[in-house]
Length: 253
Ligand code: UDP
Picture 1 (cartoon, rainbow, N blue to C red):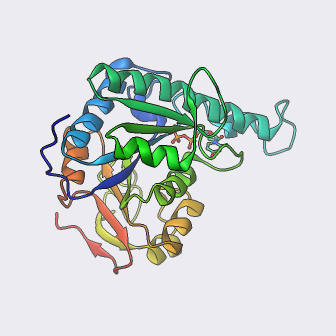
Picture 2: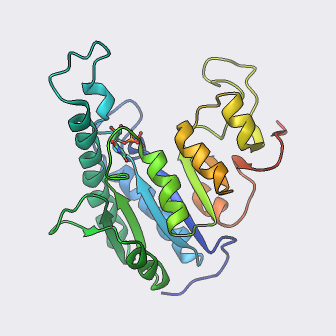
């Protein structure tokens, strides 16, 4: 595989939510959307960047939808979360075939053993795949209930020694408030972890953010719906919001 070596980052961890696999307002899997994500991943890979992907499952189901606050659920909360983790494996199968259909070798790895469908996640093996130029997809989250795939993304990013955790979302980055509800919400171009936690800026769960903060892993939040943004991010363009140790900076309008 020829790489054009335009990547600023040698290795990244890309977190894709389940909703990136479907059309807005719909559920399930739309293969045109999966292919759209796959094309962006392949282009990032062709820039010379090693890409690990953690996928969510919210387009199929989240554990929380089966858990009632009055403790009256028929489904045990842990089982509900395992159902959510299995949903991510379904997405992983779709994404891995989409990437492979574009001519790039990919390995689907799962935190829950599922022989015959995907490889078990083994850190050394994952790193070896990346070194050999394969894209890796990590499914089944952390393999443990009560957390989300954001937490999985943070911990896999650390394990595979990614330089940055790229969180693809449907808005342009991190705002001071919900931009869909508050027209005065400002977009930050840079933020420090402490501000994110103190102001409860909700773009990832707090466990994931604390994890990144503790280990000084930068996070980049950007809009995946804008074609070409994954390559822009990998190429080092300042898009979206960069979260690290430096104080907050508001983006110029
Ligand atoms: N999940 C879990 N442990 C993990 C990762 C995920 O229990 O390590 C479950 C949890 O119920 C979650 C669901 O799987 O709601 C799907 O993941 P997530 O909500 O993170 O998907 P996304 O919002 O990114 O599509």
